[in-house]
Length: 283
Length: 285
Image 1 (cartoon, helix red, strand yellow):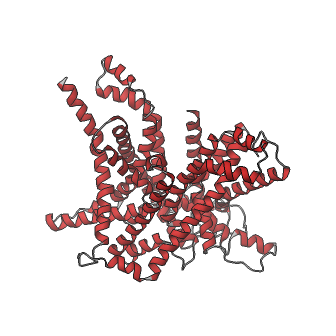
Image 2 (cartoon, chains in turn red, cyan):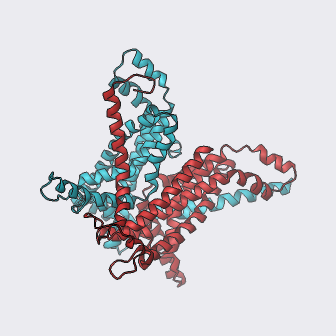
Image 3 (cartoon, helix red, strand yellow):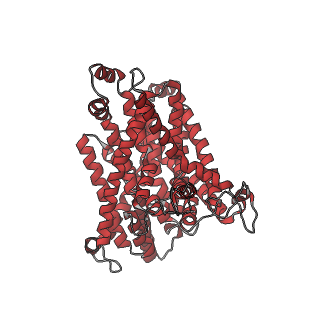
């Protein structure tokens, strides 16, 4: 049963087989996706026509590899721009929220805290459509009453960034709060007594202490923004992000160039994950 | 003294204002607007219940809704069942230094985007896919069979994409279970089934509920997996919302659908919290 107890061989091997099957289940789709990036075929399927790197470096005319694929590269750049903006905005908002709810006391604090964690249980699709509708209404109102057409209130880059930040900020806030809870406030008092002003205390003591969790939260924010589909799809203008662009290709029949992008993304996020997990376990 | 007090107030405002702006401009007001539009007739701007009547009048709408809710509960249940032995293995059966490696192996696939994971399953399952190639070559199938685009494939995909959110909290509570309780039960002659039923599962209940809330919410609101793995005539409710807003441009109808989905997910989360006497605060942590 457990390590210290004897158990029949059948039970033990049955359990091991189950776990092996579970890990095959976990990794099969990822490995298959990566392997087919190297198949010299127009479709990501068998038969195996031999190893090739054309889906990475191919210049056409038949096979255009990912490094020469303008549309996919452009959506990759869009995703990077969105993810960086979301990371900056939500790290700021999340850190502010962590300080507000851990260190300050005010009326309606509990109600506001409830609002802050609500995005965790609101489906992303609904965040997307409600923000789309709200900004559209404001845009119409301004246009009708002031005669001004404000482009940033329509679907497009600013709306995508705001929409994603609406729930990613909550995640950053939870990550930073967890560490701020353990912060010993007498350190701040000590610094004040030694003549530091409020900004200096904030920068050299509190933020310094928080920096691992702020960096961790920012990394999470970047990844979640980069991979987001459900909220983004409703707020997008003419510039598709990578997940949306890949979705359209997968839905309408893809070439192994999607496997090549996937391979790069799988490697990227695995390195990200391992770094984050091993760093987290040391603390 | 006076100066100091004023400074503290500025500090408070520095944190307070951005947070209030975020929560009101991006959460509260948009959802009020969603609610308002759902009670407004398209094109006329008049108050009406038409959008909700349309939902109950057209069987395709409410059937999709019921189907989505039912399948979400099924997926949540399946994820619970699978996560128990997996967590038990990692927490109780593996020796010390392999635990870290196993945890990394369990967590890493979930950092990869949902789209790529679903795409991998499509390559494996579809008519020209891996399984069909192998089974035809081994003469298990006479000719390729479409294994994708049905409810079984879709449920499997949803289980796959939401597994992590159950495994992590369940491993968390499983670690707190004292081995000596299991040893005591064993020494007193309890069977394995009895140990699972009376000790392990009741002990893991809080973790199962926490994971259940998150998994249910994610599955209910998912779009990619049902859209890419489900059949052509088996819609998910998020697809109905997408169709109303993007394809038919009927925002009022879409708003009503969105609000119904939000109401359903809030209701189920609330019931689960009440039944287990927990607060949302503890669950999202």
